[in-house]
Image 1 (cartoon, rainbow, N blue to C red):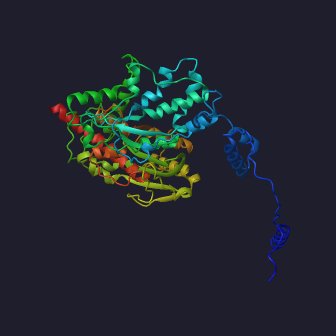
Image 2 (cartoon, rainbow, N blue to C red; image 1 turned 135 degrees about the horizontal axis):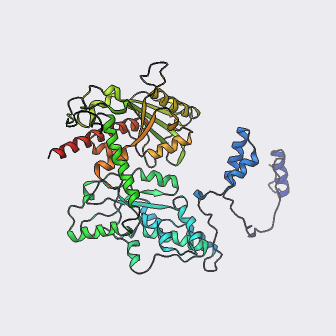
Image 3 (cartoon, rainbow, N blue to C red; image 1 turned 90 degrees about the vertical axis):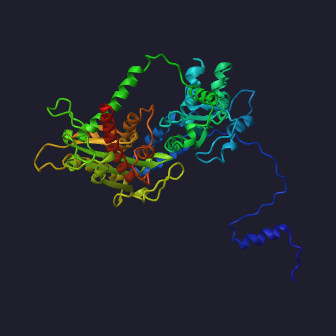
Length: 529
């Protein structure tokens, strides 16, 4: 047996031959020493430039121009947090401040009630803080933090419904400690001394709930980006029986209402009054016009018997105004990246096909005349929204889904508009049908259409838009609109598999019919009393 007395040099030599010279082992008898870390600055645009360069190469564009464009400042990204140069806050303390978490809320599920004694502040009041509580000197350097507060900061959101009007949009709150932490970050970054104002104004930044049978704020979810913040707004649970606080004492109810209204500004009555009146008039007009298009009310200057009433089990008493075709558009996007189009839903209703059909309660007999389509982007067909909403692109309930490449989606949508514009028009006839575009919170869908370079107003016959969110707000005389699921439930329209774009488009048209019929019938019943 060979002796085991082998020197370190021999071991290195043998291992070197074994590994064919690919590794070299060097002897180092010096003890490890702590070496000073090099100072470095994190470049927030580095990844943007790399992505822009890669994209430019693929598209055959100028790389330098793409990199320059990607480096332009973007307010949406928020301020870059620079460690405070103040002697009062070291780099370690600053980093500790930035890494602070709030574990008390991590275990909460949507709809869970907050713990007793937690201090809250209204989200509206937080957003108004710069205008109300920061002086002119510090405001310019602090405002960027507030403009990017949903992008650069983690928030836990809670909601409370108005106990005397559950149809209203709920009030939104965040824990006061998170707002205080946010102010600390601003102070450390730009050497300000922002605080919750002292004295009586401090009360509305430190609200507590839950005494004597009143409700406590319920959890919505945690947001760490602007896309997550937007997604949370769409998943606030519907009100429950306990939200009405029917067992509350008079004193505790007054206390709750005081908390809910504490953040409201007492603005002059004339301020924005005209603008609010114009918006309300526009919403009322939407209901009125929908009823005209459906033959539920007479045209004002028409020479007809205007005393005829709507009888639900008989055809409508008046002509269907404007010979309208309704088209509903619903677009589903990735909840954490709103620029990614996942699905497009389209539902159409030709009013010519309603002639002679009795509407029935909430227009149920008209539902089967709605024709629906569901387009899924081929490139994103395996993507599902799961964090805030339960996406279900595979559960289209009104036909077969169509898989379409993203680049072809705009053309498919434009084709749908053009087809409706010429529906029922003889070949060679230059006339066209009137199109009414319908949606629920339609402005969002219009912005997604614009991102695809689709402009509905380029289509001949495009006449106007109707928003069922606004229409329901008129129906319930609420201060804010509600989500589609709530509206359908309120109208007794059975629905399932929402957040499938095709289903949402179909249910939105049903909601439009239901609102038009229901409000007209209610109006006539009041006139008879």
